[in-house]
Image (tube, rainbow, N blue to C red):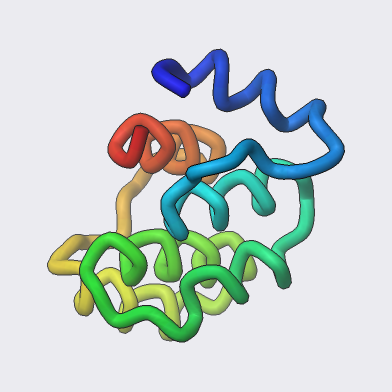
Length: 95
């Protein structure tokens, strides 16, 4: 998978494409509307990339305190962009 459009198209599949990183798998589940499965993919991971996705998920959930904690773990600042734009930015980052 090489582009955002390919990734978005994969959201029509019943199951996730093979060989997605944990971060992309999380974003795939989020794109499918399954926040819990998305969260489960990164909740137990401690690397910066997973923390960034984790932060986005808590921002989406509306738990900004928790989101800011994870943004800090990712060495990022909560962005002032739409959730849709952040999701796209994250997918592009990890493709």
